[in-house]
Length: 77
Image (cartoon, rainbow, N blue to C red; front, side):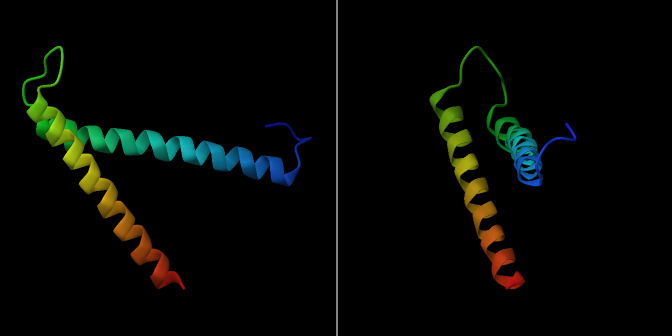
């Protein structure tokens, strides 16, 4: 991080790094919770049942995260 950066540029850089870290954590969490649950015998490709299971699991997880986020946000107000 250069000392010549404006505070706004530095804040944007930090926000981008946080977003990247959050995305990586989300992917790892989904892998751990959904892929490991739905794909019991990994092969060269997913079966239709495995693909459907992973898709439903990811959808439920993202929906739950949205509910939690909205709840926390409303309690902070």
